[in-house]
Image 1 (cartoon, rainbow, N blue to C red):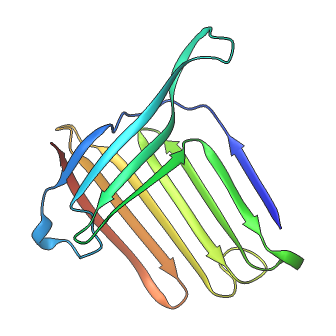
Image 2 (tube, rainbow, N blue to C red):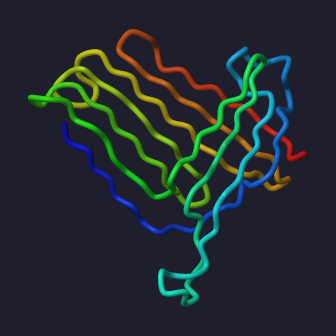
Amino acid sequence: MLVGAFVQAQDGVDFTGRWILESPSSASAETPRALSVRQSLVTTDVRGDSMRPFFKDITIEREVESSTRAETYQIGVVGGVVGGLGTAGTHYAVKWDANVLVFESGSYTGQNSETGVWTERREAWSLDSDGRLHVVITTRSPSDAPKTVAVVYQRE
């Protein structure tokens, strides 16, 4: 098993706050009705000297109809796991694409990504000019047509 990771300091948009789904009637049962978001801002280096601020991580609490799930992601991290003998694996990334925070993940059972049984997921977060949070989720797999779901949240 091989695990790799790359961390790169990046700045970006602050999504901190509580967000309420704008159109809950059009959402599926898996769509969070509310999001609580916290981002850690780093302003000093390990010696305590000032540096250009950047968001180190993001914690997202997703409230669905029956439960709440919290996850913390390191921003600027790209990594994955490769199974024994070069088969099966996972990959992930949380990174900025301009002012869009992108979460990517996938898994596969073949020699590399998109081989064997595989899935890919991309979630992109951005703010519009009115300060609303747009979340666009795209999923792909060989057994289903690509699916994109876009939802909008208003800051509470």
